[in-house]
Amino acid sequence: MLAAVHAPLMAQKSHPNIVYIMTDDHTAQMMSCYDTRFVHTPNLDRIAADGVRFTHSYVANSLSGPSRACMITGKHSHKNGFTNNEHGIFDGSQQTMPKLLQAAGYATALIGKWHLVSTPTGFDHWEILPGQGDYYNPVFIHQDGTRAVDSGYVTRLVTDKALEWIEHHTGGRVADNVSDGDYKPFAIFIHHKACHRAWLPALEDLRLYENTTFPLPAAFNDDYVTRDAAGRTEMEIGKDMDIVYDTKMFVSHEKTPRTRLSASYENMIGRLSPVERRRYDDFYVPLSERFYDEWGTNYDFQPRQSESSVQGSRDAKLLEYKYQRYMRDYAKVVHALDQEVGRVLDYLRDHHLLDNTLVVYTSDQGFYMGEHGWFDKRFIYEESLSTPLVMHLPKGLEKRGDIDEMVQNIDYAPTFLELAGAPIPTDIQGVSLVPLLKGKAATRADKQKIKHWRDAIYYHFYEYPAEHAVRRHYGIRTKRYKLIHFYGNDVDTWELFDLRKDPHELHNLYGQPGMEAVQRHLHHRLELLQIQYDDSQR
Ligand code: SGN
Ligand code: CA
Image (tube, rainbow, N blue to C red; front, side, top):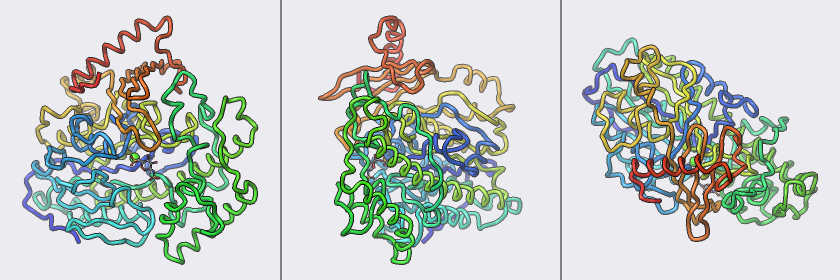
């Protein structure tokens, strides 16, 4: 199935390979090198421990397709044209970083979730999941347009295919034995489906984390007072998580209530073979029977009035049950991801490729793990604006430990191009992170760039009306403050947060006495960013 990629070397062999691993909806709270409260991810932590961890890493538009488009173009959504999942079709004829890498002599490959609707361009080899893809026995679309089911769990299959391509490209040789000119430097984009909703674990991981009771996060019972748009979403664990689809309370077709998404759930687990299904049911059915014995069909969640009215109530008990199930399933899915990333790292180590390879681990955006009572993403609020970003660096990039500068997913394209020795087109809006990665090797010019690094980022989310009902908004985040404008037919509100005093963004200070100067300054900065990025929304 693999396209031939052996071709004469063009790029300098000294240019590093790039292994870019991007997961879906994997948030920093669920990665132990960022947050030790919930899970243990030893392999992801290895990348941070041997390399660098970005502590202020953000996306430009917290949604899958838009994020991917920002990443491969180095441009904000209004420039790359893919603003939302619902109506977006990526224009693959435009300039992209994979195409520029190809032109610089790189072999390029893409495996896994693509989600940009149009056929991938700029990759010598690709094999993608249709749309969101499936966890169990998923279909892959091949470069010749054919579709076929692969048996197994998606996280493992994506990794298998990625390693198979690297093996094919390098001839499987250990790097020390490869003479210059033998194969082109490569860039592979490994895009996992995990850990997207509905968080279906690998069968061997079903029983993990079952004895863990996860602590409740900050603002779990948020009442959204002063934040109008936040109070009008459909992403609350309590009222919006589907008891069958999300919480997996399913006994059998006959014995399970029909919910909005129960048919979709039956389709997802209907992909399992009879033997696999038995293993799956052995775990979830007893849990579900106990749940329905206790709750009957009376598991609907009443919208809450205030925090105090929830505490100790029946709804509070149901909410916490759903939260624990959500956390456990998500944690299991992350476990497989961690193991499979470990397999890639081991492969690179065993083939002596680590010295000459940049390994990036990131996600298409962050996610809410119960903060504000939510799952999903979309908002410019911290948990979903942020995305994990850790890197193993090739020789020559000597920085280690934390990098605290504000970086954004539009910066990946110029970074990879600089490492490939390719010119960075002037219409790319991100900036190369290479100066931040040099450490001891930084030149005076690099130090100047670091000194004058951006002190604010721009964000714009467009997908409304849509699932989860998050209103359109744009905003600015500086080191200390955030200014947001929610806009549209049914909303026109501003929010301002002091992240130092209010890290969980509960107190909207917009229009408050004493905030006048800060507010004026942020409005001005926001306008400057919109001019800089040429976004006419004002
Ligand atoms: C699906 C999910 C949503 C999710 C979007 C976008 N619903 O529509 O919960 O917000 O994807 O996610 S589901 O019923 O299909 O699971 S994204 O990461 O692809 O942008
Ligand atoms: Ca996503």
